[in-house]
Image (cartoon, rainbow, N blue to C red; front, side):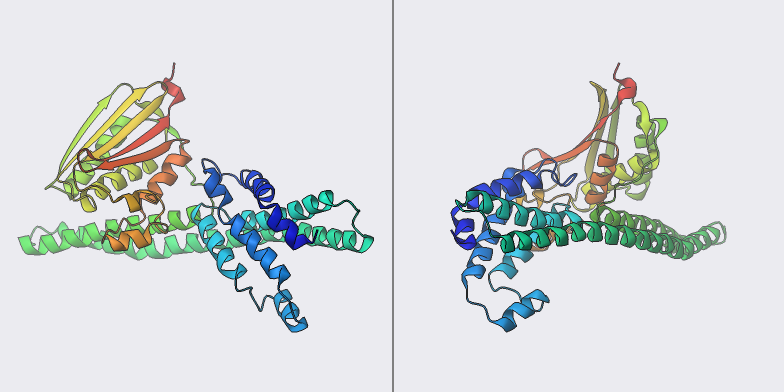
Length: 373
């Protein structure tokens, strides 16, 4: 049987091997459904088989080998697959490895299905492909490591260069505000400058966190013994000062002492509460924290308009929900993505439920072995 015919006849068994390999692409594959793991594999296989059956000139072959020509059928489906994999947080090395494993699976299954053994020339071509694949397996991760070093250096300079002038503006605003001769209007303008500086600082931090997270780097946290109830209460007081027209209710139950990154969890709650106020248009936000069964449960609830279901599907992925958010005139920003990264760094989980009757509730579950006994 010709290889193209074999692919079309055995799509299911080939797709199964694709799925099994995709499961090993961690941490991106954790929690992915079978449908998500399979993605566009059947369309890719059909496009490959159809392209193999189409007559090809020597010029076309040369152009394909140099990446100067894409198959009319394979190009779009390959681009679709890359987009979905990037949304699922696969890195470049994992995406390339899927194709490498696919080629190996197809050739192995095809070879074992034949009654007559492959010719020596065909086996040499397969061995040549394996050698090239081994080189790719070394080159891509090495490239990504090098890019990561340059990226870290860039982000270090970005944070330093931007925070310097922002802090200078903030300090100058505080000095102006300390002048008791300022009238009410002047003080209001100065306070606006100060709050804008704080907002810019948070934006810089979120942009850096977002870019590192999208490129597969785990968020670094520093755990220290602290009372989570105190952390949450302090940040709620800060948000309440910034949003005096919103009622923020807070209740804490049980011993919330544990090993936490206080700064990051403050950022988490700030993002969740301000998201409820700004995007949920809530005038009342309820925050609950409780210790139970070796974990801490944090709930942030508001009774504003529900989040559209099209947005809920990609709520913690701002790139994935971009089109739906524009359709509903909703701009959720990077805050929820950062929340998810903070929770993951604490080995926890975050979920959201939003209905017209019950409102919107974000639930954060953080393991807390310190108080599990």
